[in-house]
Length: 132
Image (cartoon, rainbow, N blue to C red; front, side, top):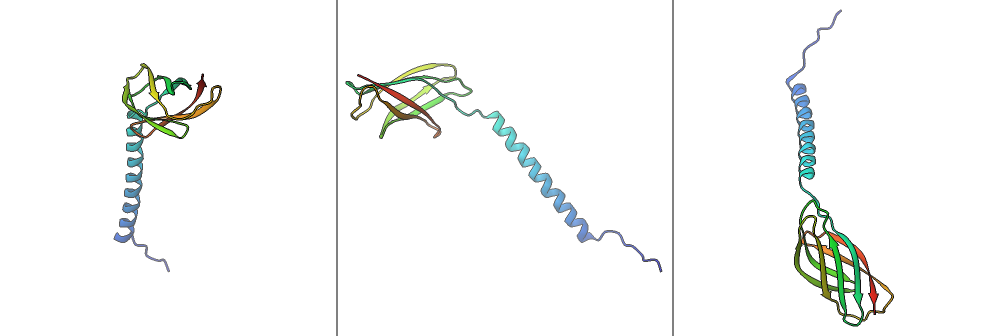
């Protein structure tokens, strides 16, 4: 005896529509976040040279901002010391020389690790050579 087949019930249709809607929202969110990430630039900074004069305790940094956005330097760390950089802004494509006084006793001929920290929290490491 042949069985009579029914069409899909409204519950089955609702489940399929919900699954399609969830997938569509997920794909839309992925596309949106990918687009936003591609339009906002992440700051970059190159530390060309870094040296400390042991006698004057002055750290001299030569920096280049290759872009794509301006950077604002807030602090500089050298060894165990943190000093303010005065919120210095370096435009895209510009070079900058920053000199800050760093307390501490520095031995000439050694390399001291440090970091340049931007206003957004990004940090760029460097090694500073200690000169007499």
